[in-house]
Amino acid sequence: MTTLTVRDKDTIRAFWAKISTHAPDIGKDALSRMIVVYPQTKTYFAHWKDLSPGSAPIKKHGVTVMGGVAEAVSKIDDLTAGLLNLSELHAFTLRVDPANFKVAAHNIMVVMAIMFPNEFTPEVHVAMDKFLAAVARALAEKYR
Image (cartoon, rainbow, N blue to C red; front, side, top):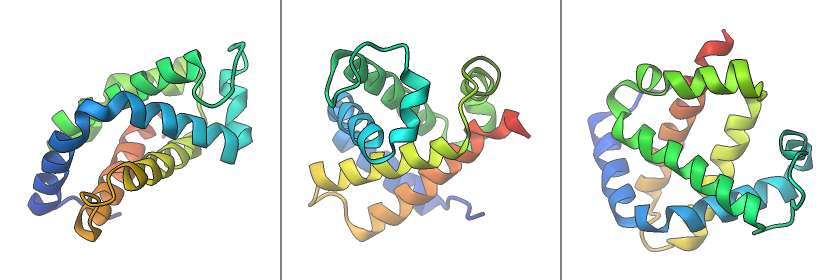
């Protein structure tokens, strides 16, 4: 497990400040990509009528997911405590397999790299990878 350094946190905060206004589009594209590339994730959304990329339910949930990422950025100094409510929701109510947090993180990173090729430098890539892995661990906390 790699911990986030002060430099990583500064890099994440600066990158998020540049891209956060595009969070709804990042979420929509990342969730659309996840459902196509990892079709097993569709089981969590079987109650939606339209699972096509960019559909209204995907767009809405993409906003929700990226709201969680925004919350994580704001609580970056203690993700486990900061994301406790989200961890409990996913573990006890939604019953999402925690392996899917890594899948979602991967898709978010892919979309960020596509949408922001100039800003998504190698340094940002490393920091975001570490950050989203830490978010996934924090979300999986209540599964232990």
